[in-house]
Amino acid sequence: MPLNSGRTGPLVGTVIVDLTRALAGPHAAMMLGDLGADVIKVESPKGGDDTRSWGPPFVQPADAERESTYFLSANRNKRSIALDLKTDEGRQALEDMVCRADVLLENFRTGVLDRLGFSTRRLAELNPRLVVLSISGFGHDGPEGGRSGYDQIAQGEAGLMSFTGSGPDDVQRVGVPIADLLAGMYGAFGVLAALRERDRTGRGKVVRTSLLASVVGVHAFQGTKWTVAGEVGEAQGNHHPSICPYGLFPTADGAVQISVGSEGLWHRFCEGFGIDPDHEGMATNPQRVDNRLGVIELVSELFRAWDTERLLKHLDEVGVPAGKVRNVQEVYEWEQTKSQGLLIDVEHPTLGRVTLPGPPLRFFDADGTEVTERQHLAPPVLGGDDELVRAWLTEAV
Image (cartoon, rainbow, N blue to C red; front, top):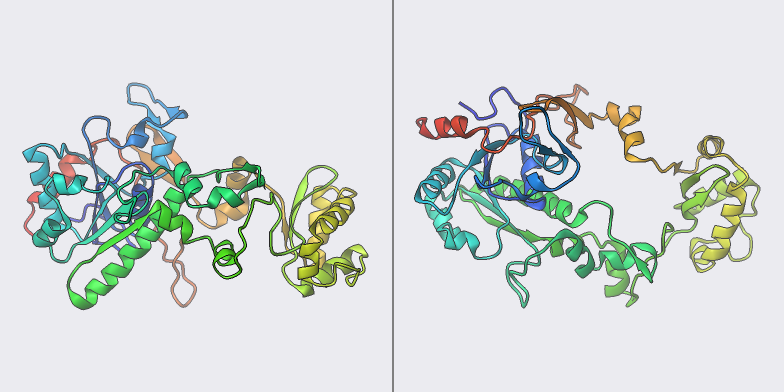
């Protein structure tokens, strides 16, 4: 019997053993679970995943353990089994799962899995078709290989904070654990590639990534700005370092963001607001970037005469990309968000019916018929699926 009986999706029937905790690994496992995979989350009986205690906020229904909203954010579409991997019984149960699994995910510190008796060599002996995803803080080798990593530390060490913030003297972290989330996304991407290769070769691979690698992997133009041009990017607040005008501008009652990302858009913008597009120092994007402060001052002065909604309507009519800055409540109450399937309702074992942020992918047939998975599992309570998983392990392969 499939663990996620009744679910559909591209990965239906694929079994994932998730040994990860905190966010990077659990996010990768959740992405695979969103695609229909059977995800078995293995947790310590003593408290389970670290994020079960991360809060507030917590939600505590009557006569039940409190639930961390942090944990709920990274563990939908999984089953939980509580195993003490320091005991013979726990290790045997894990070995049985490995023999039947397609993928194993882990983010222990380097060497921990080896000491538990599950080195990559041993895992391959147990199951040559197994794909292993291993996520670390700063890489598994190199002069600082094995160094433990946490998101904000990685954001700083990997350079992200150096070009995020109001200015060079006011660097800021990104408002979500972006290094963790990116490592999870890259990890899931690597797993899918390794599964595709296994279809061809019949053998699994070990996929490795890290928080460091994930952030460096998205440096984009900030990376080549240094590697090619020899320039070090700095924090510049809410304005783009290479395009102008592109950023956040005050209005009479709030703020609006615009993106004038081409010369064609610049001419539309100027026509819509009565500006000479060939004004000295503003005729081309490189000139406008060099004259950034003057351009920002000009646009800010124009926009302060408009209220936000009227300005957004005018920008739309002119054909200039623009938008407001929404808070989280406004995002989840926005009909466009709802229309994209980004909210899901699930039945939680202790909380009852709750609404969660949903998967960011949708699938369609060629004729436009949506075939996206709609049956989602709530994040599990600790050990809530022990009986189900153990029964599955006893079934004939």
